[in-house]
Length: 339
Image 1 (cartoon, one colour):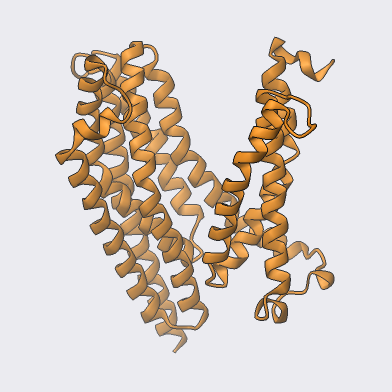
Image 2 (cartoon, rainbow, N blue to C red; image 1 turned 60 degrees about the vertical axis):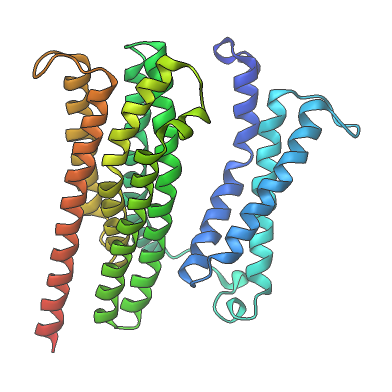
């Protein structure tokens, strides 16, 4: 079958076909990015990501509109541009690592050989992290689809609230990555006291910064919503959802930062299970029941889903903090027995 005729969506299938060429490139970039982060170097990947973003703009223009002798590819050109930029970013980061005076003494790409035991350990540690992130992200996508059954205005308002929430989530998420790195370094140096302190400080910092988001949502909801729409019906619904969004910022920061600390302790399987239970076992079912049915209360519409999100994130925060405390106590007991 011709790839351009799959599902009678030639543009979409061609775009996916073009984007597929960039998948190995972005996989390589994030692998190298993880190495840099593990070496306490987060600036270089950030700079290269910004370069990729800036390069992507003119490359998109050239391939979409067929400038400088290139064919006019339209929307498919975006896929090819993205793939090219992915490979460019990987090449830049690879060159940086190869040329860095410190990294050259640590890693030699020519001597790298597959080690099945190490590959298994990486998969054992990394797959639960990926599943954890996928579970967290997918719950919001599913909720957005379910809200589509209520009405177009409700969908628009939900998308506004979800978009704003995803932007503010970048702050605790980035802090959680920093916590993982700092805690891992402390444990590698056999500084368990330092690992505990870094976990606590990181969680407190993430929680305090989340209060800034809470204040912004509660004090300036109209100004924020006007960036998206001036429709009065959509704005009114979005303003209500923004209040619920403000309510779960603190819980979201706590669960994300505690999760980051647990990754530093190489504890990824149990947090994954806790995330699945909190999001798919509580948040989504509760949101469906409250939002679309009359089983508990009269159907709340989109507000019911936000109550579900708030409940799920709150439970996740409590469970992640309890798990972190358990991991720290267990490690202290092991050290005491070893001593």
